[in-house]
Each structure stands twice: as C-alpha cells, then as structure tokens.
Length: 76
Image (cartoon, rainbow, N blue to C red; front, top):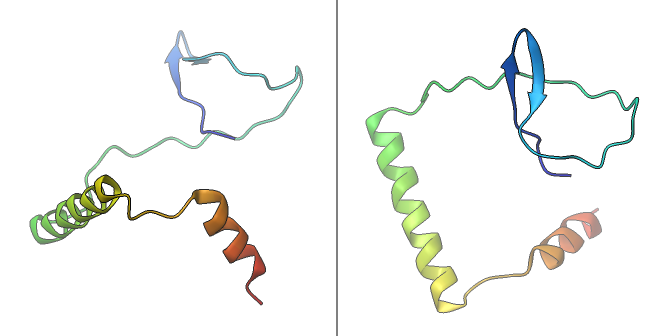
C-alpha cells in the first residue's frame, strides 16, 4: 500500500486523494518532519548516488522490483 497524504483542515485530517480502505479501518498517522537532516557533504553524496542510479536505469541496467523482493524473501 502506498503512503497516504493528508492535510489538516479545521482541526481534522483530510486525505488529499481517494482511498479504497474500508469504513472503520484504523490507521496510524505520523507527522513528517520536513527538516533536511543532511549536511552539505551528505547531500552531495546522495545527489551523486541518485545521478549514478538514473544513469544505470537509462542504460537498462536494472532489476525488476518483484525479483528483488523474491530474492530478499528467499534469504535464510
């Protein structure tokens, strides 16, 4: 299930998109801290890794997510 995004309106949490959760389903909401916790060195390293990952994807050097999950679940 994808995370759900909501906002506060008149003291109530309002989902920003529809959901197929059944009526009465209990969910727990945790506020997201928008503060950037990376320093300049860490941010540069993250940016470099993301650029490298995008280049790998553009070359087709990827593994399907279902394959990755199957491998992880098969580990002892």
